[in-house]
Image (cartoon, rainbow, N blue to C red; front, side):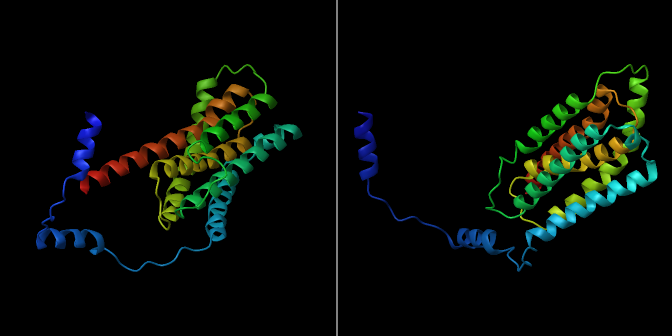
Length: 233
């Protein structure tokens, strides 16, 4: 019976749809009312270079201001492992952002998983080259690192957002998370050079943790911005 009812409904003759001129004008205005010429996007390598300059510039500024006592206490293996991973993570995140600025571009990895995978990888690298050490001032030292590092992540996030506005973002939440983590890695890199505390838990919580805070902050800001735009529209 259900199949016969479906066939009967499909075979019913279609009546002429009556659309008022007012509805046509409204639909036309919705489609073409706000169309205007736009400038073409710059080449991808230009955006990638800008992201790299922002990251490197703020990192250099932070290291120059805070100093680099942590660099001199790191073993060569620790330097290679940590800073290679940080550089590779920053490069992949920046590359992902540039790809997402152009609709239809393919990514090497699912963009929503990329920051999570890189965060886990960074934690594993840190855990493999550092050891647990006595740290009676864990909270006090952590607060000092947060106060030293976060002021550089905030301007990094703002500058990244200005660059991203030049593109056509289709997934604000994903872009917010990726950009937030990239901004957080600026602080992580600065603290790895500045902070001489080699306790693995201190590094994971207070250094690498800033990258996670950046990821979450970028995601929440994107969600809030999208909700505000939806309410306004």
